[in-house]
Each structure stands twice: as C-alpha cells, then as structure tokens.
Length: 134
Length: 499
Image 1 (cartoon, rainbow over the protein chains, first blue to last red):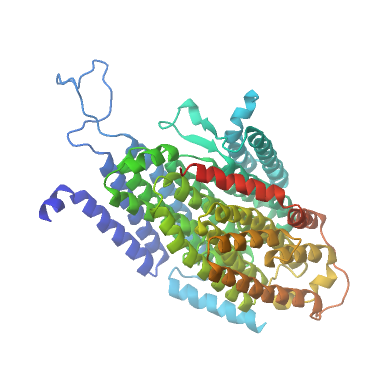
Image 2 (image 1 turned 90 degrees about the horizontal axis):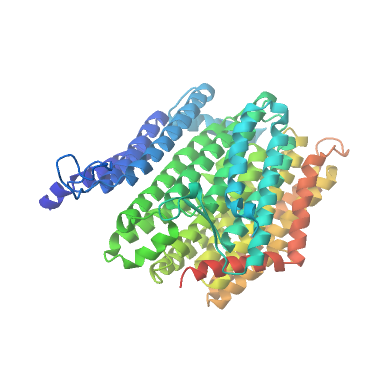
C-alpha cells in the first residue's frame, strides 16, 4: 500500500482533489463557492491527463534535427504531448464555464440580492406562493 | 460522388458556427433573418447528405478528415446512417424553431439584444451538430460544452420575464459541467488503456486490452456523464426548471433537439466505442437503462399530471418521453434501437410543435403559461390551438399520428424481446398521459374565458412553423415508411459496428 502510495502519489492527489471539488459543489450554499468547487473538480481531471502523458525518464517532445538529445543519446524517450494539448483545450472550456457562471452569479445577486442558495430558495418560494394566489 | 459533396459533413457543422460570429456583429433587425437562412442552409445540406447516403447503400460510412489529417491522428467527422438520421432531425427542427423564434420572443428579449441572442442560438445548433458528427471522443466533449454553454445563456435570457430563470440556468451550468467532466474522466481512462481518441480506432483496440478494470471504470464515467446531458432519470432534474423558465422560443429549440443529440451520443458510446464487448454494454443497457427509463416514464408522467403550469407540464412530459427513447435503446435488439431512433425523430416533431403552439397561445395572455391564464384560448385562437392539439394527440400516440408509430414499434420491440410486463407499463403510462393532455384540452376549449369571447389575432410566423410540424406528425403517422426505414438503417449501421 505504501509503495503504491509513493509510486502513484499524483493519482491519489487527483482523487483527493476530485472528491474535495465535488463535495464543495454539493455541500456549499454559496454560489461562488460552488464555482470554486467546480474549478477544483475540473483541475483534478487536468492533473489526471497530465499524469497520463508523463513517461518515466521521458523528455520534452521536441524532435531535434541532429537526431539526439544534445547529450549524445540517440534513442530518445519522449513524453506524450497529446494529453497536454487536450488539457489546453479543456482549460479553455473550464475558463469559459467559470466566466459564464460568475456572470450568472452577478445577475442573480442583482435580482435576488443574495448569492446564498437557501435565501434564493426563500425568494423563489415567495414568488411561487404569490403566483398561486393570483 | 461530386467533389464538393465530400465536404458536406464539415459544411453542415460549420455553417451555423461561422454564421454565429457574423450574426453577433450584424444589426439586431436582421439577426433573425440571418439565423433562419443559416439554419435553412444547414438543413438543405443535411437533406443532400441524406439523399447521397441513401444512394450509397446501407453500410456506407463517409468520413471527413479535418485539416487533412487522417485518423487516428487527426479529428474525423464520420457519417453513417445513424448520424444522418439524427443530423436530419437536428437541422430540420432547428430550422423550424428558428423560423418561429422571432415571433415567439416578442418582449422576452430587448430588440437591441436580438443579434447576440441569435448568435448564442446558432452556437447551440452548431455545437449539437458537431456533437453528432464527430468521431473523436475528446472533440465530442468540446462540442458538448459549446452547445451547453450557449444553451445556458439562452435559458438565462428568460430572466426578463421571471428571475427564477437565472437560478435554473446556473444549476443547468453546474450540473452540465459536472456531467461533461465525468465524460472527460471516462475518456481519459479509455485513452490511457488504448492510446487513441478516434472512436472506431478505440473500438478496435479496446478488446485487446488485458486489464479491463480501467476500461469499465471509463465506460461508467462516460455513460453517467452523457446521461446527465441527455436528462435521463435520475439526473434529469435540471431539465424541468430550465425548460420552464427559458423563453418560449428557446424551450422549443432545446426540447426538440438538445437532449436528442446527447441520447444519440449515449447509444454511440455503447454500440460503437464499446461494440467490442458483447456482454458488458448489454448488461448496462438491460440492467441500468431499462429500470431508469421505466422510472423516468412513470415519474415524468405522474408529475406532469399534477403540474399547474402548462409549460412545466410539457417539460415534465419530456422527461417521460426521453424515458421511452432510452427504453428502446435499453432493449438492445435491432428492433429496440430502431424504435429509439424512431422516437428521437417523432418526439422532436411533437415537442417542438407543442412548445411553439403553447408559445403562440401564451403570447395572447402576455406570455403567462399557468393553466388558469390559458383558459378558453383554444376557442379564441383556433388555428394555433388546432395545430397544438394535433401534436398533443401525437404525444399520447393516437393512431394516424407519428406518436402512434413510435409506441407501436417500441411495444412490439419490447414484446419481441420477451418483456411483456414492461410493455404493460409503457401502455399504462400512455394511458396516464391522456390525463394531462385532457387537462390542457379542457382548459383551452371548455373552461370559460375570463374576458370577452372574441377571436384573438394569430401570427403567421408562429402557426406556419407549427402547422409544418403538425402536418409532419400526421404525414409520418400515415406514411411511416420513411422514418422507420431510416431508423432501421441507423440501427443496422450501429449493429454493424458490433460484429
């Protein structure tokens, strides 16, 4: 178990971050904190992909003209660049999601005068009962 | 094949995406016209593509390499018969609801914001089309997020009428983002085990993997992520508020096509990516899809019966209707998958039409959709309400409508697979859906109107799209061969990937 922990410590961090993020999204009443949790959750997935791309003793995937890595080694082991590219895309998507979420929180604050979910719920209930009586 | 037809898969997706940018820059007056032209062009391209695919035979698969990079290195757009059917539904219904959208919006959105509204509208459409077209598992995630971020914006536009739309949009955003991230985790697991992202390539390599645990974990994550987007019970709870509080035009677009594209992705994952495992996906379909679908059908129908808001009632019934589609897929025989595809097409026409019709009637009462405010409108707006009623009859599956064909194929597929108890539940819920439709009919035609009994003006740009869908519902109910034939080819091409 300890060996597994040491050799795969980044995966354990991924799982830890994932659970922390999901827990914040589910448990937090504050809408901004929900978005923070969502970002942590997404970041954990970025870390998962980056960890997948790393090859032990692999170097940066830049092909040299000379065919060796500058130290005279001819067969060079490269890390996998594809997960990095994918995560670059996923980061952009994550930024867009957070930006849209924050914009919505601003509008919610302006019209409900709160960003706490329970207070918003109270306002919603008031609207519901008003429209029922009318 | 003519040269330019080779580019059709890309053209269909690129038209709405590019014109979204152009529409955002144009003055607001012509935003709707440009959006209509662009979605119309996309629809036309989809028809040409379908005609070409039909000529080419039943196991035809067309692929397009973006940037000229062949798979598995580059991103591939691939078209088989399952793709063409869904593309045809998405572009067709996208076009019809775009036609009606400007009239339905009325006062929902300030006229200066219309160009940006239609930019988000076209992004939703383009994202959904890309979602259906792409054969790259990661590219799929990007299109998922393009369409869902754009549709969250559209839902939030309902805040001009009811500020609860903002909360609905926020929850939709959070739940949608979690669903998409789950999907990405799943793709990560499968990528780690196979080293490829192309769906067909992945399908070929997955059976060679010796350690199956990560593959199954990946499958579970992917399926649960997509189920969130498709609003399958029990992760459907974002759908009724989002549909209920969005502007009416947006509801008609989202209800008709948004969940359909995600459902297509669901069956694509099960049957194309995991086509190499005959046992595990089959087990998931039978032991996960069928029970969840049955609960969705019963819960959605019962909640719709008790709903006091007509728009919310139709949204709840969408949950049940998605259940029927998933049930068809869950049966996992050729006939079952075929019935799922038939209902994808028919439910898009039914719900698209019902929301357009409801919107057309709600305009007369300042956009209110509560049952009490709709009283007597059926008598006062005969053209719109008759079209609405035809779509409604199709929803409960009255013979000679498209809905009947859906139910008939679904029930026969279920009975042929030997689950007669499930067929009984389907028939029971169909009977129950008569109750909520009857409540609508009673309110619209028989309840006394609180004002004078004059006829109200009806807008041509609402009832023409509505009647297009109503006539389509009757046409495909009598002359069902076209949809059932396409759906059969769709199912066959998916099963072809399985062997």
